Image (tube, rainbow, N blue to C red; front, side, top):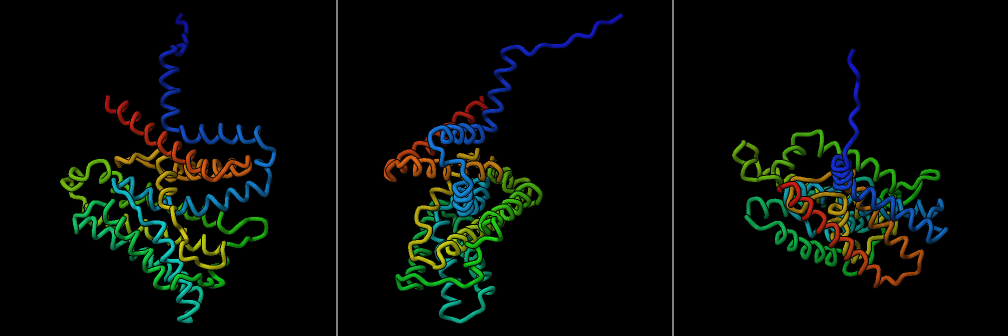
Length: 326
């Protein structure tokens, strides 16, 4: 007769599991803690209108960050997404208001503008041997300058099709619907396609990826083209909310996009990142800003808080990589 025994987890085992869970889901845990704290601090946080407002604000940041996720996973960085968002939406508005093209066509051409600018950055990085930091820093200046040239420094009204992106279908804001669709597409690209799996390989070790037969340069160009396309979509979402394109649209959004990706668990060293994590990272950023606004905290201090959060996220990533390599 045999007696079945059940093993009781040791404290060390429990500690390891908790550490692993926090390492993989730290942003989600932080978001939950943040929401609970804001719910206690202000009754206005968990109201329907405020939650919809958070969803609308998250949509732009997250869509921009989806493209940034591809770039960071592949081991690069894209500093131009805010300016590309402005240029793409401004080109769309100008083609509608001044060139007289149909609204649906100008919306598509806005996305094409983003893809083209991203491709140029990718070519400069992959074939021009420029570090992605420098290539996209140059594009940041070029795209912002072209935005000002096209607009002559004044706002341009958007087409009805772009304005629709800032409207609602019944009680549901269109930006939230666009966010869901964009997240599904981005997740499919990253997890279910050859180019997506190749991004992880290139970001993990570009030389090993090249030796294994992967077309590293073409992958890098594709990654930046995708980043530009998602940046354009984010710009069109923002323009739709404003019913016009401002010359300074998207200023500083590249930092929000990078922060959302890093807070969501991606590694700036490349090879690590998830679209779901990016959504959570964008939510953390927006919820912090929203909560601080509800608590009447100065916008100057909000910048300080966001900076501290970004520094903590990067520090956590460094510690996590050292732990894995130990």
